[in-house]
Amino acid sequence: MSPLLIDSNIPIIASEQIGEAWATVILNEVAKGNCPAFTSVLYCLEILESYWQQEKAFEGRVLYKNFKSLLDDQILPLTVEDFDLSESLFKRTPHLPPRDLIHSAVAIRHQMTDLFSIDGPTYTDIEEVRCVTLNELLRQLKLTGDYIDERN
Amino acid sequence: MNATDERTFLDPNFMSYLVQQGESFNDVLSQLQKSFPKLCTDVRCLQEVVYRYHLMGDTELGSKRAMEIRQSIEVFPIDQDVLGKMEELMELYPKHPPRELLHSSVMLLQKVRFIICSPESHYHEIEEVNSVSPISKASQRI
Image (tube, rainbow over all chains, first blue to last red; front, top):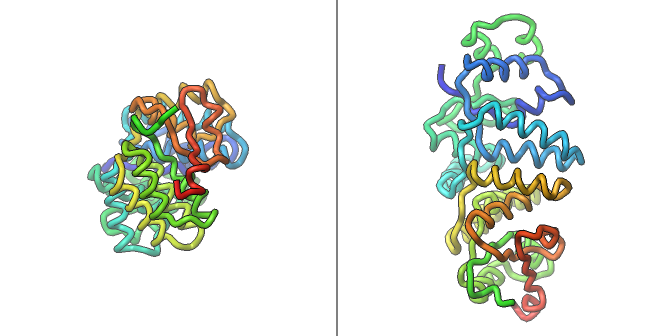
């Protein structure tokens, strides 16, 4: 299977505070080496900033460290070239939020096409990337069960 | 202390602060470049500019302004080394906003000692960096 670029919203909804079982299952598959995956420094920062804004800095740091250690050396940097590409994407798709554009730019520049995020519908407007559905991912990982109904 | 002799980091929240006070963005950037010829920033700052304008409903203007900064000054990347340095700072300053620790980490790794920032920011609490808020100059167009 193609490597996934995992959005910060996946560890956030797998966290103790939200506790979506399907997100935990996928991250466990990543930990077991069954699901090749990357994330980016930007996604890692989003975890810290999101929890900071909710005045839950400590919980944010714990989740950030766990997520970062899960993907360890598979964390993509953020460069000025990524920014330039996100600006080009903006000219093509000005209705998309800047967040989606910069994450898509990071994926495209690392030849990654598959994103795993709960923000699926907006990413579909960028032709170079696609958001993998939970159904599809569970099939690829040969997992079935109750998780499908939770998400789809 | 004269910050103009060496590289100086620009947190664009300084520019937002002055624009809110009625200054022109282009004038502020131009005057900053004259006063601080070795101005630099990081790519997350550029993205923050876009995002700030997006929240105000004018992503196109945010994009334009971020690109003006990008084309005018040196822009550093954010990588795993930056995250590592930020984790060190988070231990020292657990209650500090993550974004300021991030930009401070870039500065430390790039050996940039001075940062131009909004007077409303909290960089002055981070011992490892020196904040500069040239507001008095700004009132005379910096």
